[in-house]
Length: 297
Image (cartoon, rainbow, N blue to C red; front, top):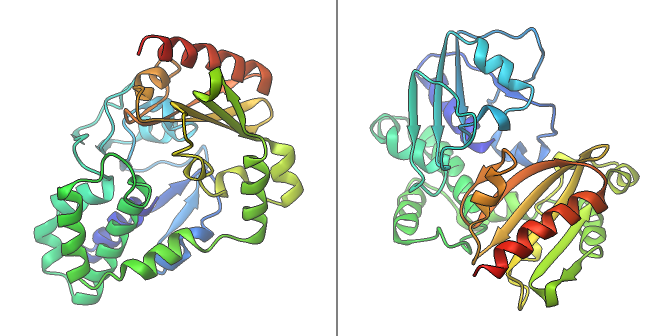
């Protein structure tokens, strides 16, 4: 989402109108960056001359918005994930997994354009870029944190970015309800295979009782990464009745290839997919996949 806000601001200063199409999720956690943003919830009758898809290269991961993308006269894809199942056909395609985030891609690709912007606008673009890095490196704790990332962050700070302020705005602005959601999710931890596999879940009943939309919740997996002895984490979030968004995290397994079997994707160490069924059914299926993968290490 933040990369879309970044690109929209750049387009606005070039004189182009654009709309960020959402699937209806609440965007309050990005309020410190949305002063000039224009959002609309997806509607089936929407038609645009051009659609720019960010942080995704597969129709499978667009959901209902795949129709909007297919109907556009032209498509642009900018992504840093490996090419997945059902790739989007685009007139312009920039896919490079070496970038830490799509925000960083945009900053690099459009650096000459950014340099001539007014200082305040340049600072805003730098802030967006920095937040995408915070998110995709899990606050600089993931394996994709390298010298290039820190070199870029140095440049962003020279543009006026204040890391402590953005860290607070992005990570420390959770509501009491969101923290309860996190706590109750953590209370659902299950350890399997002698602690090598860690499962936890958040169901719709929990979200409803707290008045939370599942897609607005904080990243639960962030709080269980690094559990001693664990090889892989599976977090199951119910987004519709018996529809579960599964997030996989591992430093040892290629979870991207596992997620791709189900039309999902992501990165080698962090990926996601969607499964249908009861919690017991989807966890049993995912357990077998992960158990088999661990046995081959």
